[in-house]
Amino acid sequence: MNDSKTNLLEAPFELSYKYKRSSGPVMSKFFEGLSQKKILGTKSKAQKVFAPAAEYDPETREALTELVEVGPGGTIESWSWINKPRSHHLLQSPFAFALIKLDGADTAMLHMISDCDESDLAAGKKVLPVWSDNPTESITDINYFILET
Amino acid sequence: MSDDQIPKDYKESLIHLEYQYTAGSATTTFLNQVKEGRLVGQACPKCKAVYVPPRGSCPRDGIATSIEVPLTDKGCIESFTVVHIPIPGNPIVPPYVCAMIRLDQADISFLHLVQDIEIDQIRIGMRVQAVWKPKDEWTHSLENIKWFAPIDEPDVDVSTLRFKPS
Image (tube, rainbow over all chains, first blue to last red; front, side, top):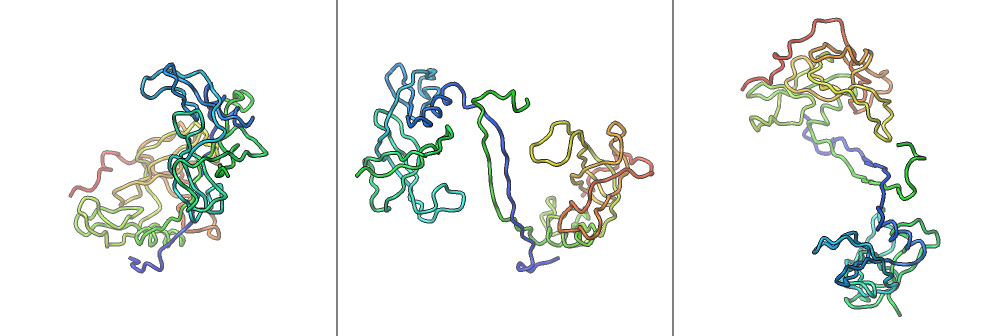
């Protein structure tokens, strides 16, 4: 037996799986909206607005189909500062993952906040999206959010 | 479904994970031998069960499998499945056969390919032997064995393939 830890075999592994999926009738519109610099939510009978768009109200199980535009600005609900982004992160300088409640919405959306210091962030602060110049109908059509000045 | 049949709203998604694998001492020893074209299992000093590939301990007795057991590259098919569905990125073209190969003297089997035979001729208990890649292509991997191929020996009675009793 080889008990010397220094002689153990090691190898880098890469697990990758590409697949195609449908976003469905509601989420398709949400992603289409992003490519047109619009953030869409869905509104329930009780006038609750879910953004990003939700297909069902998790409390009442109501199917949600009425789309409403929210934002584009929003407020920070909570955040997590990423001081040393890793290679798989979309931003390579320090940034925050944040739950952002878009104006007009009752729920928060997870996205990133960049171009700021950790000490600049606080719950309730206003943020604005920075849009991508090359939209692909995906959540990355918003590059990130920045603090409203 | 071919690509042109996929509705417009289908989007390409990607699951991607990079990680560093450390083999551990039992697997390291095993793979160092595999690189030299040898299959070496490990036996439990208590129940004598032979494990290949070895993981370093006997799950039944909970002790280190400290005895090295050189094995032949011959064995039999303990179980198999015919794969008809292509997996994206997999270079092997279906239909092909994955089989649990029980090497002679071993008490467990491992998964490998069976080729050089018509698929409908493959059966449980069939005797097989490893078909190795050319020596200069050997690495620390069971892929040094291209596949297992049938050999002209009588089938094994699968009821004898039980795990060694304690």
